[in-house]
Length: 360
Image (cartoon, rainbow, N blue to C red; front, side, top):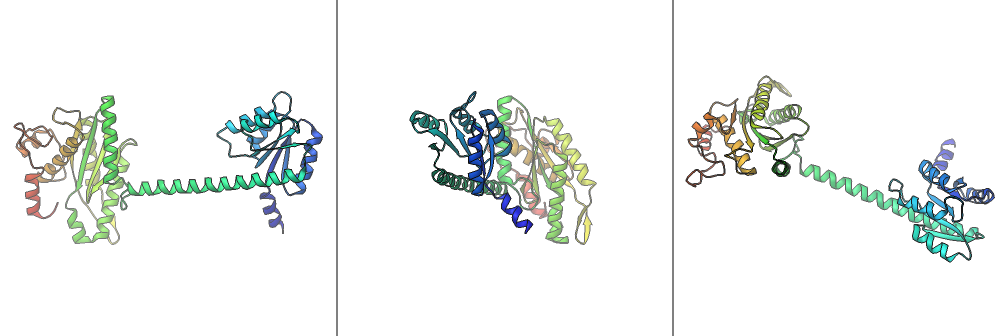
């Protein structure tokens, strides 16, 4: 029984009556409370504004003629406050004050009643505006729900489902944004491409569930070591990409080496056992004389990764290092062509050796 009374009380609509004549406030309070509304009164404009901010009424019944701050100014301030929800305002005005009615509606009032007040008419207007308020609230709730659902779908579309890091689409978007930012501000940017060594053997020997655990734990290591401004993502398969804004090449190489050591010392666990794996890294950076743009930087890191794979794995290779130039056999600008302008097929030697081995 007590619960029912409490619920009923909590669902009462709240009405603020604003009038500088206390008798008018009390008469309206008694009539409205007898109809099941919760009522508070305010004797002037500032008190009305303070009560609205504190109490958040469902509707305001507002007298036009008040000293210091009249009802027109009160309604203007209420409607101009973006922090307030939609609160319907009914203006009370004299029978012969057409100009006041027009001014009140233009100031933002939603309806009006004339004095002396016909209570049946007032009650009908109150119910009508409260219905409108509910419809607006319902519409707002639906719009918020739809917006949250769209945000969730967008996050899903940009997130790798297994590891929870960015997927390839998200990485490409972030790289584009970061590179444009670097161009505008003349700031460096680095990318680190990394690939789990002999990952295929994990799936073949221990099963795909073990492989999934390795990928998830490896992604967690990358996230733990990366800064808040960095982006970590799964580029494809067992290959991951890190975007490091504001980072010069030497710092990116140092970071990649720290990651390599971290993974080398880590024991991956899965249901039924543990295993160890190493990771190979390729690092590239902009600005650099050999890097023409965003895609060239990404290709440079990818090619450096494959040099790391071909030269023993579990190592970090920077795209402009002597071992990189020696292994690739050229010192071409990394825009897909050599100094004579001939196209260089990416990963040519790497693909042959890896295909022969049958395991990256």
